[in-house]
Image (cartoon, rainbow, N blue to C red; front, top):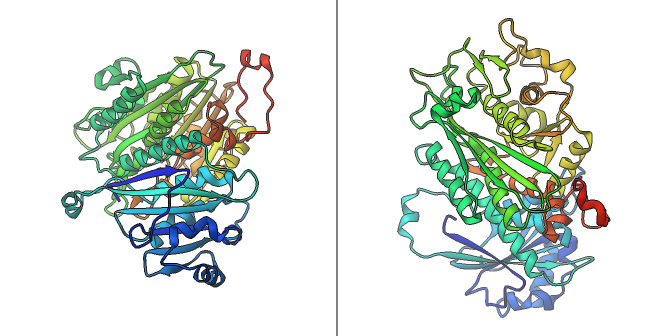
Length: 521
């Protein structure tokens, strides 16, 4: 998978399945609307029209199904015909699963995705998740050949014309972002420490002609970033706070994306056990998603000020490690008594959102993090959890998730009932709750919000992606598609506008609108 190149094409051309294996997939009602003339060029001479029609007749998805058309070189697969209201109409999770299970082997292959235009973006991102980039298998290093997969969309329903070049470019940028985020999350800490992560950020900045601002090690302490410094000071590779800024002319507002980048989480002195520590290389999933989304958003033309903030640290054990009972002064000016060194993500994010508020004067702050194990209990393995001070943005996150395939479900937002979980006798707050059975994921998010203030007039959104950041032992690149969709209205790209919470036809911009804040949700 690591040497696979995805190519999105308006037409993948015709080829014998013997020389270019093919997978055709879509929801059964959509497959039944496909004309033989639309697919025969990718199936003949091995598959006849009769075989094609008979294969469609045998499909009975529950929730999915597949049927080989010619040996293992041509397959048709059916997605669920219906999904519930909390799922994406694209059935994105099943797309990834079917590709992993049904795509024929080969150096050059083809995927023909049959769907409606509104499902193209989610489907493309789901396809990208099936092809992770990172591997250290010795057999992979011996294989010199590069593999390519041509992806063609066959559109059905309304607006089913050919795919525009701009749409294909957007899909390329988005899927590159998804695969970049997944590669970073899959990479172990001996290859993805804070130094390496900064190199990844710098590489993206160079491609976009943006110079990152980097605050590291003792400078963090001197400038008051007590959360980031306190978490990462015991590690061999020092902690860092890195900012990429995109400030176009004509911007109407300032948006900050803050990513949790814990490159490895031992738990610190409140150390994790032998069964819970493996997999903690994924604790940088929020920062990885922010990086992948920022790259794609800027490449596609982002009309507002956009800042990507990366809170990087390794929560390690050593002579300089933070101890329970230590008190840290955070960038917000508030003091935190540490009662659990394994509740470190909220500490680094508190510094990040506070900087976005105080130094960047952000109108909208979104933090993304693999924050709590309790997230999977609250919203499951497939839905991220969203906590926000805005009901409008809460609904927008859910809507964007359904449109892009990165599913989201709300958490309870009620600081007046929950924030007292952090009461401290000697500091402004503790960093971990007193009662772990009281809305644990909500409380963790509220800790972050408290460092900009519950009465802050701007929009604050917290997205906990602890569980959907991976499936099995592989990263998903979760969060990239969500950010691109959620902020699609700030993009110049027509496809991102279409998958935004507002959609392409739901807003009529007035000429004087540009002098005000651009409406996003």
